[in-house]
Image 1 (cartoon, rainbow, N blue to C red):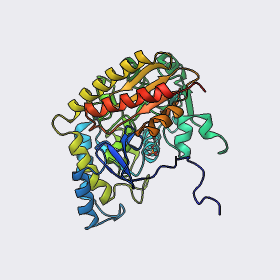
Image 2: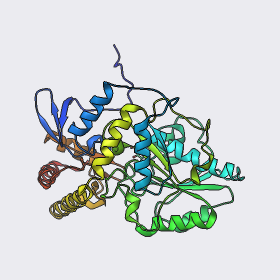
Image 3: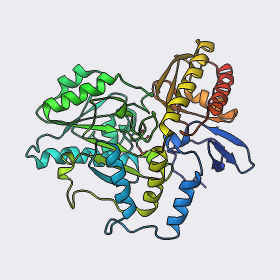
Image 4: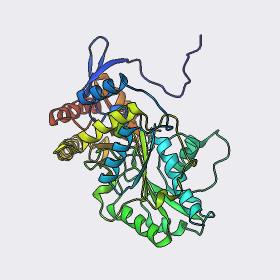
Length: 394
Ligand code: PLP
């Protein structure tokens, strides 16, 4: 019999049974230190008691309603998100790609309802990743992800990440928006200069464009602020996609927008059967409250500084293999020199019970739960040290 699942993934022969905090366990009880957290998702670690309690309580009461009826916990979470950010309005989704779809639609609708339907083009960046729906793969523009899916969708103009002049040159009468990840994840864990995000804001203001931030990976406290762009003064977006960490492992996403930007998103323009459902909203509130609790972000900053310092030590020891330590906060990239494969490094680390991932641009990616301790960081770096010793050029 053929394998029942599509061949879209190639997981190793390692099955996890349960998780607790920063560790994942096999059925036999073998522990693994999780430094990828389902690709930047389990921000509170595994089986966080408050999240488990909220989910269990909600599961016993009400699972699903659809958006035919109000979900009070959704309104509560939307209010909290708006109070903590630039936003006035929220649309809840189930995933990051859906949050991006909503963001792209919101930007185009803004111009439509303001009498400029000809403004529909969106400037995007090399190395971008926005998800796997049709809209998102076209926004991302990665030829590998577009191949075989028919003609590329009209309306996206890709320019070099970090190049403000290229952005200025790409703006036309038809441009609706600029869409960017404040820290690129999939593209190689690349954090641009603050001046880049600020410059994008200025270009948008000059030309009446919507600025869309994709904070699906960089948000939810990952960089030590609730959202990564909040490190940069004068760089607030009009629209933002969030997901991954905001659900702490329960599938959810959100598109946030200012009142003005959301003007076109009226009854009938968008929808989702499951988005904003009671289970997701119950967990989402707990995650938000934890992320914004006293000292939580200080911990992320403190432990990420420690991890980065340790990783620089690792780079000193393995200067022949490591080219650069990058990223922001606990979104960390270890860029390997040409000839060394980050997937192989991740495999060698996994053999030693440390879970890390790979990203574009020859980068080994780490996105641990935000609750890691300095001891966890030291343990991870010690394992990576051994894995690097074992890593051979391909
Ligand atoms: N945007 C960014 C920046 C991402 O990193 C991802 C996923 O990795 C997505 C969007 C898509 O999110 P999802 O896989 O939840 O659809």
